[in-house]
Image 1 (cartoon, rainbow, N blue to C red):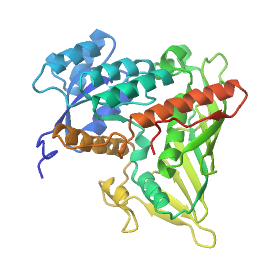
Image 2: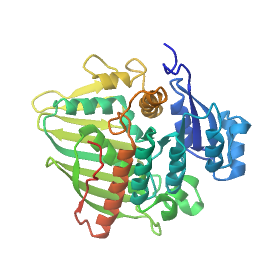
Image 3: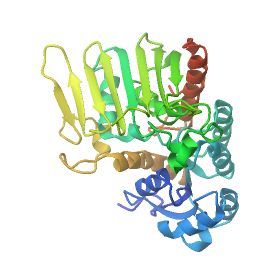
Length: 395
């Protein structure tokens, strides 16, 4: 089958961010090309013009498409016959809005890292721009790309767990136990800086992932939220630990706990969902297993690509036979693949619905910003209950 039929060519990718010393930009670049459906051809890899140029050979980006700023890139790419089909934004939070807005207004499709913007007002403004443009806009809540996360979602949607009563979602790390930002460690420095990260630290960085995972798997609509956030590292400006309780519209309760100061914890995102008929448990650090429990029966362990008991979404998200581990890059690539399908539809004149997509989109990004905003405000009110339902949240 031709690559990306009916276009019959690879999609052309542009990367914003990802220069020397960056983490997530390289992840984007690797995931984007994993399935041979795209090629990285252009980039503005750093806010520092010299570093932007110096980083281009690391990605095999030709010199004439190694831009010194995103503004230069927007103008230059718009004039090319072989312009990029989409750009990936992999920069600190405070720059997402201006970059994404510029490319959307120029008609480019965008894949943006999360959280969507610096604050809720920016997110809502960007949503208006995206809706007016008709471009494809994805947000990399990449954990929704794991095959067994998609399996869990299918099981809940089909009623296998019954009515959902409770969601417990946690994202536990330990890398910020000490104030690495005081030593100007790059990843710590911007994440703990309110002028770059926004109103939240840990809860904006990883708490959003924990909340989104429960929202994606269950499909439940939130109603109210109460939160307590705290900075335990003395002198730190933003939270490094927090917990929130979510009341859902169906009466279910959810908890979200996020930590970056727990000794020995690496990247432990995990979720448990309790239904009236069964319960499930999934851990990101062991992503190829999904535990299903039902009273009076032995526990079941579903494995990735493990047999006919898996649904269509899980099967379509797997690349290797069972027993061959797939993990972070592959899950990230699954977000890219489903976004590519929409980009190809748009490019070939087919209809696609922004509000009805299988990839995390701008509406999920706006809800994530509302989550951050309400958690920060609730914490200021000593855990006061606040409304938590955006009028444009995904159905």
